[in-house]
Image 1 (cartoon, one colour):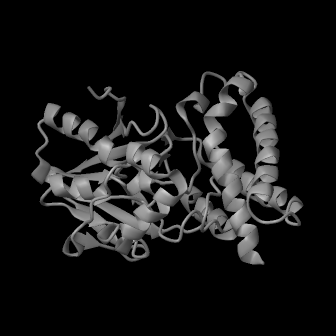
Image 2 (image 1 turned 180 degrees about the horizontal axis):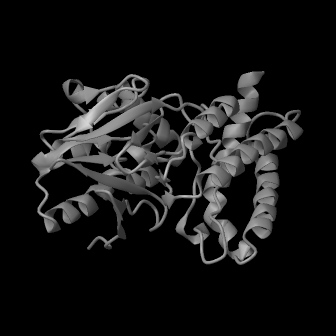
Image 3 (image 1 turned 45 degrees about the vertical axis):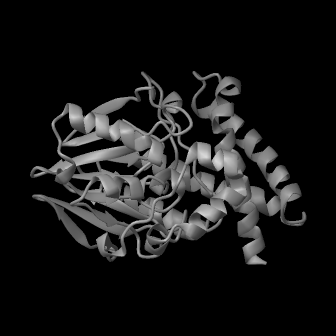
Length: 321
C-alpha cells in the first residue's frame, strides 16, 4: 500500500499535497479552488496522482471539476504525471509554457533523455511511463495572460533562467506566486522556526541555467510585496525580500565558483571540482545562517541538488565557450 503523504491547507482555497517523489518533503503540488472549479499546479509523477485522487475523493471533488492542470515546466518531477492526470480529469486543459508543450504532447525525447541520465531501472522506479497529452487539450498562455478558474484570475509570467520552458503563476486572491524552481528550494528541515529564518538554495541545474535571466525572474517574483511564494520544493515562504536577496547572492556565488574551475576539462573532472566547492560553500552558509541546525547531518539532504547544480554550472561554462 502506498504511504499516505502530508497535506497542508494554506487557506485562500489552496491545499499543498506532497507528491511522494523520492521522499516526503521533497516535492509537492497545489490544488486551487475558484468558483467550484479546481486547478492542479505541478503534476509530480504518475505515482503521485493517487495522493491527489484520495484527497479529492475524501472531500467530494469530482474529477470533472478540475479545469486546469498546470506544470510550471516540463522537468519530470514537475510534469511527469501530466498525462495520467489529464486522462483522469476529462474536462481539464493542460496549461504549459509554449517552449515545453511539444514535450508533453510527444514525450519521447523527454523520456529518452531522462532514461539516458538515470538508466532504465531507476527511471521506471522514479517516473514510469510518461503518458502523452492530446494536443487539442493543451494551451500555452502568453506572458502576462490571465486564465479564469471560475471567478479566480490566474496570471502567467515567463520566468526563464532555470529553464526556457518555465513560467510562474500569480494568484491575486492570495497574493501568492507558484514559483516552480525559480525561487529556489527550501525543504521542511530548513524551514523557519522560532527565532530562526528560512534557508533556501538556488538551482543551477542543467541544461538551460542562465544567471542573468534567473536573477531577473527572482526579482520579478519579489516585486510588489507578495504575501508568499509557494515552492514546489517545498511549501510556503513568506520572508520574500530576504530570501530573494539570498538567492541572488547564491546565483552570483555559484558563477564565481564555476569560474574558478573554468580551466579544467569539461565534464566529470570539472563537475567534481565544482561540486566539492559547492558542498563547502553550503556547509558554511548553513552554519552562518542557521546555527541551530546540525549542518553535517542535514547537508546530505542537499547532495542531489548540489550535484545537479554542479552539472548545470559545467554546462553553463561549456556553452559560453
